[in-house]
Length: 249
Length: 255
Image (tube, rainbow over the protein chains, first blue to last red):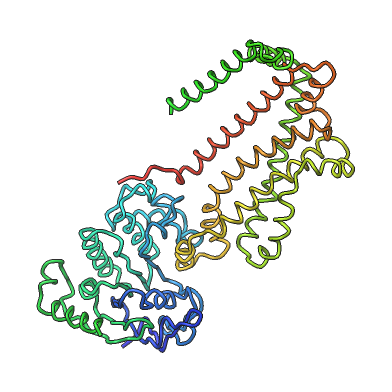
């Protein structure tokens, strides 16, 4: 089976302390893999290495078989802190169009931005500034920006950790819908066990810092998930218990 | 906004009233410290005096040249200093040494080098005005949120594009605020160096001549008032530009 993303033996240290030791994981094309681990275990470091934003101390990241040197082309990223990753001087539309500037023509840029905003339920909001929107809406803008980029690989770093519970559920479903329609490979980092099991095709459980892979669990839930039914399913309950037990150790 | 303007005007009127009463109180001789009405009358007379108007024009011209030059020198230098740590480290002591040197103390040196005239007043004003711009721009570049930079990098934006789409917009409000400070400093320096004989003409020289010999204090104060009004107008103009183009920095948060 082909592999879209392959991380092997990845390790990284900041100064004397290792943040990540020997992490290996992979993702098949179109797969949504959730990485769950305790707070401060090196999840973000791992994601930054996958993105090519930092060069790991050792180990290798391959995207579509190609070793990563620098930032991966066709990559889009959604950060936890939408208030910092959206540019306050650009309108919502400007933020969504930014990654397209320089290589996509103006008219197509506008079209793609409109389409992406519509997709996340923000049509007609393009002229507003990020700080005029609620937190949930701002994170939708960040997702729209990633979508407009038409990524083959989508990385999400605790994307729903800073919004309220209802918004979070909405955004989780939005992500599932987007993934189903666009079919990109996605890697999502979270510390929330329920979120990981609810979203993922596979869950990678990390140990406490320095991070290693504690277990990889396949999620055998139906492709279409819903916030009430899925979370009540015996398989869901079983999996979340399993992940919780692994994280306890 | 209207309330603020009204209150500002009320403050000015109260100040003029106190000045007027003090001038008539007999505490000082009116020729030494004329009341507001006398000074305002003198000012009205000056505003139709071609000699004085050419002095105003000279001062405004030197001042504008100084601000533009200071910005052209300090902003790019600040960008470099702020983004290249070794250069910043190498120049820190030099900047800290040069910055507190009072520009007026350089008048004799600059007069010897450039002679008396607008070149000299502009040079002195530039020297004083570059520091706030240089240090603020450099500081702003160092304060860019790493998440903003990471976002741009993750989406594959080149270093040049990141400079123009992330770094410069981020620094713009800081630079604009520094520009207002520098504009004020430049005006002070242009007028004082004119007054201390570094220039030829200008409001500073007008004030000096009015104050010496006969000692026309009404003209001295009218000239001084003109400088104050110029400073206010420039600051208001720059504030307007800041609100108009950098409104995102102060936009009302919603929802």
